[in-house]
Length: 65
Image (tube, rainbow, N blue to C red; front, side):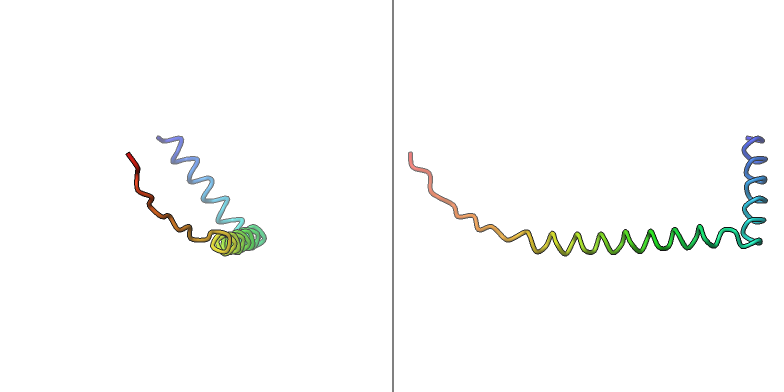
């Protein structure tokens, strides 16, 4: 548990240092662009799925015994 706390403190310090230096902006911009692209792709896929699927009419036929 102490190792986890120490590692977390070091990672937090390094992350804050990188953020303050402005080196994480490119990473953030990349994540935002990937998220927006995935959202657009999903929207396009849903639109295509609704165009392809057509309601199917099922009629019941009586069983002959």
